[in-house]
Image (tube, rainbow, N blue to C red; front, side):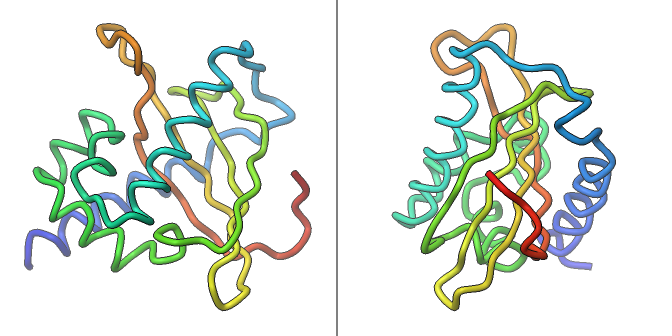
Length: 151
């Protein structure tokens, strides 16, 4: 099996675990500084993806994701194949990030160029030894938006 396919399947398994995280109503709230920082990391990665800057997009990934994919080109290939709706969404709406088991959950409603709506649940982890930008994206689960979500 090609390594990028194996990596994609590994990420899919990891992301399935994200789907089991508790809903926001049961999660603990974050402080204002952490809320801004978490949202900022997701926004920055979305901007890097929109600009086609694989290295910058990869820089927002957690150490686990960086080890799993190894380099920016492999990572961006996986994103293009498995998550095309996050590359240049026509619109985004951010929910309030919430503490959840294993880190923070940042939900984002996306609308792609064709008008399809999606819900992306980003899991972020905080790195204790990082100054200035301690939050990193540790995975994302994207599902079609049924239209029942509200931001």
